[in-house]
Image (cartoon, rainbow, N blue to C red; front, side):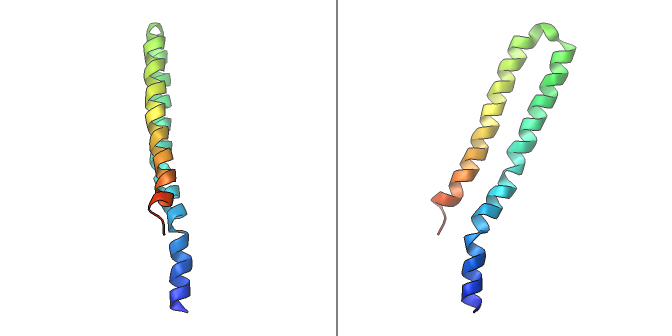
Length: 77
């Protein structure tokens, strides 16, 4: 019975790990767009550069989220 229970728990550890790993990129995206909005309010003439940096930072954060989504399938049982 204990072996069956361990197998059931280990099957869902990947999805629990991804849920925890998604917190980081979520916080990162919030920081990027929050600070970008403040920067646009302070210097509206630099909107093009600020927006380009926001999009680049967003892409990096989302890449981390996608890597976190794929890793449980790569290293799973």
